Image (cartoon, rainbow, N blue to C red; front, side, top):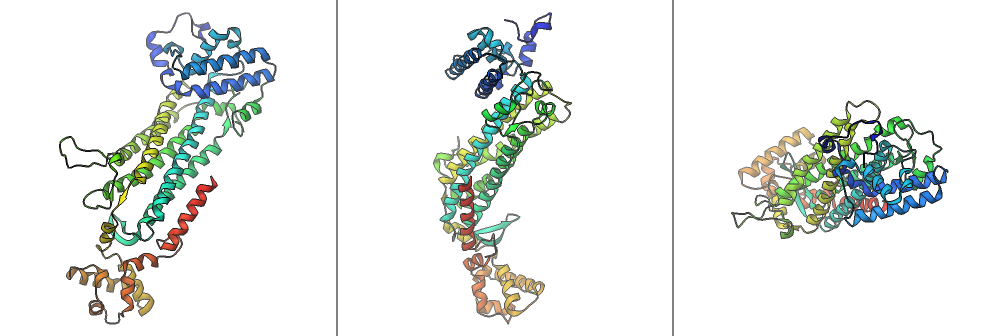
Length: 460
């Protein structure tokens, strides 16, 4: 059987062209969306009197049979069919005859692929949101039990101020909250139907784009058909959203790797999600977070690839755009499995709370608190208080102590005006709870952050 578009050609396609031109090896992923769109298109054609009700019924029945064949692995994918659209249309015509040839009335592969791809991306946006919700929920469950667990808060990977483990975990929950908002925003912005745009300029047939848009779950039809068939912003957005989300995952993965090392010893990753060495029997490697870190680069590559494909294209559809799908399929699959395994790893972590608290006694984490005491209680200007505190840190180091361990006498050797009240400022738990401004690490603020994040999840 010759190609469906072969009427004006005198020679058949070369086998090399078939291999180079075909997208069917990867766009067969869109079979559900293609059949869904074709069924709605057939219903609209019948509603508008463009095909008969009998022809519509034959088309729907044939499409259902094709769907079953694909699901059962009985559908024969042929490279010469070029793409998913041609493969299904050809099989439909084999099954039902002339009625199958009428399905493509008032439609082009340009709006057909734009529809299929958009339906896939829209579905994927929501699937990723559901997985992100599970990750946030797991982080919140962990955080509720760790509001008083001290760890060193860091800047420049240097010990800075004491914070709670819960507070640290909530920082990542906040990142993933923004990711959810991005995916949902993209979903809303791109929830418009391309079907009915045909090749680029619409169609002379009396179609009903409002009907097909509503049936397919879109808000409305797209505005301008010339733009629509060449628009891949929706694909770029999901690639960007995934790349940003994977960057957040990579940052968390990096800390899981550090925290699981002997140098930190803050966490133990479950044996279910770690691997061993082929030569060193003592090794337990954090391969899952390492792979999560690496897959971030892969998602970046897919985004840059499609941006590069699109950057110089004239209106409207160009064959270059066939390169839009593989990267999206890959990024979506990468995002989904990454979120699934991240949630499992987080849920099975063991925390070494004693080691975390010991780490807060390294690096003089309550230094800022001493400076605040000098300002608030001794009315010393902050710059001078900063200098005095620096001298107190030097004193502690000369004694082999942490600042929080200095006695009143040792503090008074630095600044005679210091009173016993200063000792409570140097207490690490007091230091953590003193930061009670909105968004801070104090227990009551952390509990409020947990509450707000739970309300966010419940609102979705």
